[in-house]
Image (cartoon, rainbow, N blue to C red):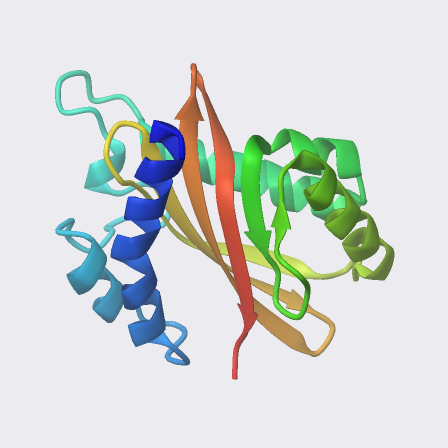
Amino acid sequence: MSKHSQARTLLLAAIFPALLVTGCSSGTTQAMQGAASPAPPMESPDMSPSDMSPTQGTPTGGAEARSVVQNFFDALKSGNVDKIIESFSRDAIVAWDGQATAEGTEAIRTLFKDQVKDADKQGSHAIDEARAAGPENAIVRATSKQGEETMRELFVLAREGNQWKISELMTNKTS
């Protein structure tokens, strides 16, 4: 297992229990913030204190991760599979509710070819939270509505060189 994969595994091990604790209580992040992050609640929907570099006052991880996820949603809505794939790292893992887990570029491409065929072009996507998880990782939580179905998404992003890429994506239906 590569160091990159080990770091992602440890990060997921730290946040996955918190995601389970939040369970069906969508709309609140109290359990997740208490278990996964010492950062205070976000004051702005666009940026939290953990998104800022302490020395320069410039946006870092959380704001950049938010942008990557928004680009992913835009590509998904437009049905552009190539743009969707550009959002992911080469060894990314996607656990899409109701589908087999897709690992790596080709498996993710196959998954999203099927997803964009069935996509509701009028669907909506909202980023609920985006925050840095250290200098090399970020977490983004989002909610999507497709027809009558509402989905929750948890993105783990990792820095690859000077770019952020989605390394893990997990979705499930709200109850």
